[in-house]
Image (cartoon, rainbow, N blue to C red; front, side, top):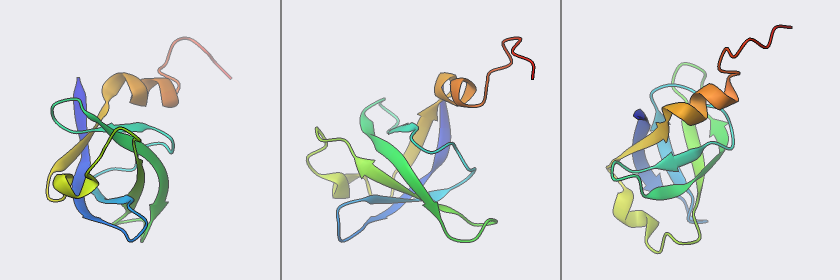
Length: 92
């Protein structure tokens, strides 16, 4: 299951995807398009806390990142659960 993480606003001068985030996911999570094509990895979050942007390093297989500008970006629910502990009985 996919969860929308935000919309791709533009490609930076160093070919990174800039995403207007709808929530703040964990760093190093994999980002996909709606068809489950791997876009890359979230490596930084910038901007104000109430309106953050994510920077995604494109996957080496992604030949034209600019083709995704204006489209939505997604993360997998399972990746979010793994990164946040998932509640599997691990108490601290």
